[in-house]
Image (cartoon, rainbow, N blue to C red; front, side):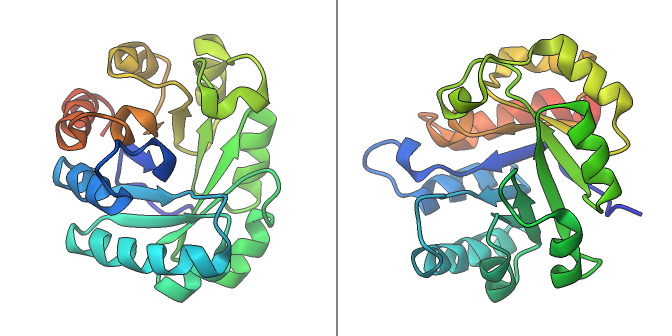
Length: 213
């Protein structure tokens, strides 16, 4: 049985999008104060040695707010800092291998772009998936054109796992994402690059929690 997913807003980090004069940790602190309860540390250009101290600081911060911390790809770093789980992409270790290393109680999220990938992730022991890009976003240009709402709806209908819409998500998109069956949303710039990450997170949660919490 997959682990229960107790969050609807999934914040993904990108320190390059943090506004000047702030650090990633300061931005994360503001977002957590705004209600974020799940953070994926995704700084893919850092080595494990560079990522570890940042992960340790973010682990301390997320614990303070009783929030989940997942590490993108790096199972070794996740284990080292006592993270709540990992998020796996197409070039990561397979979910079943991650599960054997992490144990049954850790969360495993998987990035998907097609319903077949969602089914495979579920079979391999994942707990939830992100699906996208739904809308146009610079961070997902490598995956081609956005998949759109019809593809999201089809993925959600077929998925045995909670699906988080990903890619170009903005506050005004929430009604149609909820209508499409999305369990929650995964965001980067909408919170990380916001003038007020606290208010941005709160606005997302104020619009999502009653409907899909």
